[in-house]
Image (tube, rainbow, N blue to C red; front, top):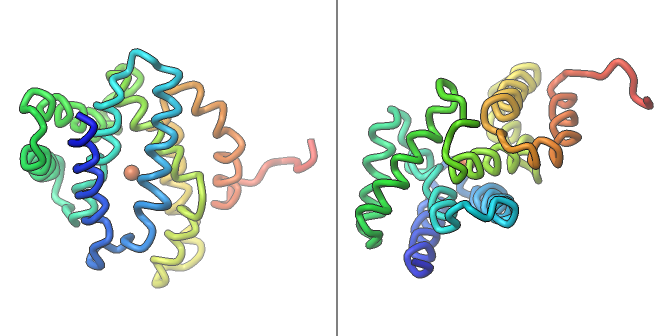
Length: 196
Ligand SMILES: [Fe+2]
């Protein structure tokens, strides 16, 4: 299984460096690698989680976005399943990963606290990674046509969605509470007091 996941990582990494993908300069280093690290730390806590499934979900969760697919989950799951089949994953494993990817994608309609632990880990790690490194600043860099107020509003919307819908594991909420407050403050949400 390890060599299949290595192949998956290599293929997604290669696709991420395609200059047609707007985030190609930083997406592996400042997003996918960080998501993977947080997710593997969570696997050390949630020992019943299937690590291979988590690693697979990490490397497929943004594959549709990397390819520039904007027209919904059907197309995304179709190309992702095709990628996994080409690499040589067993059909049963691919079907499960795709089923979990669909649950991951349904975060706005479905309460992810009720999702399988592998989905909860992937979703929590994905959202938490946005608070590490230059992620939010890169949105400003890549959207020069917007006013700074619009950029603040964009980041606030993303931070709220991440915090309220995507981060479902208590260990992540606890570890990232201060970072979340800082992101919200960067987006205009000021505290009443600064020292106490
Ligand atoms: Fe992501």
